[in-house]
Length: 514
Image (cartoon, rainbow, N blue to C red; front, side):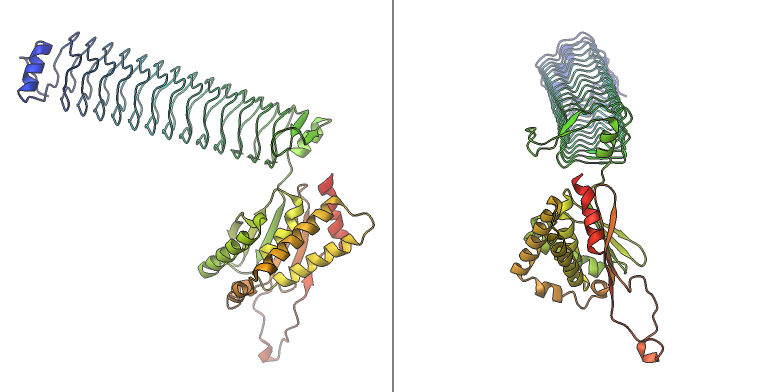
């Protein structure tokens, strides 16, 4: 490092800077006054500027690596694109300072004042901001991975799109902060105040939110997989569409929480409070519910309590919270090829445009000899329609359509028809009518040269109680290496369909209304 022995005062520095000198590495100008100075691109590596007055100074694009600015005044200073790696800024006044794009990785800003500072796109990886005042600060798209923000105050701050993976935010104040789209995976947020914070679409995978206050927070579409929320307060929060897979919610307060369309699977709700939660179209199963408190939930689409589900005991709560989503499982007796995959995706897209209920792609599992398509739905009454639509591209599709139509027609002849039976009938025929009216036959004819679509298939339905019904099973399903008829050894017989009778079908529908 260069030493500048001739620089004794702030005036010396300004004079030499005006003369073209830029490198002032290692200088010692503690308690100097450089407020309002225009010093862009200055090099102050390892400089000592403790208790200095640099308010409103222009230090943009400067090099302050390893510099010491403890208790210095930098309010309103322009430090955009500055290099401040490992700099010491403890208890510094950076109110309204501009640090856009600055690099503060591993810098120390303990108890620094950053009220309304702009740190957008700044890098603060592994920086120490413990007890810092960041109220109303802008940290949009900032990098704060592994940073220490324990007990800092970020009330009303904007951290949109910021990265805080593995950050320490123990007891931090984030009330009303904008944390939309932030990455908080594996972050430490114990006892954090997140009241009314916006955490929509945030990545909170594996985050520790034990005893955090999330009341009134917006967690819509957030990913809380493996997150720890034991003892957290989520009253009045919105988790619409959030993912709660293997999430710990022991003794969590979820009363009046909006859990509509949430995906809660494999989570621990032991001792949690769910009374008054909104659960329209929530997918919830394989959860632990020991001592879960839930007197009633709101199943109305608009959360207006027009559809209330009450529970008389904990067993009823456990049964309700462990209902698997209705599913249609279609197994094709052939592995999916890239060509068949493209054709299948195209035809399902066309069907989805015609029938609104068929707008969700299936889960696909491929083995060396079979393809399994699993279609999930929110309403049991849609199972027959989805089974018919899912099978439509296949040679066996027409047989399945006939089987379903016959079963429903037979059911309608019974003296005591169920509501579910009528609803299944309406949705199936609406789907068939929509397909026929659009004349999609030319699309199906294009699939006839694919062996995949001519393969035998199996179709199973699964209701919310976990009961399975084999709707269709081609008799040749699973048969391999048949000798040819030309050899005179085997004569092919017409394929037969294995399907349920009306009693089996009605028994499958019965628990759906319980």
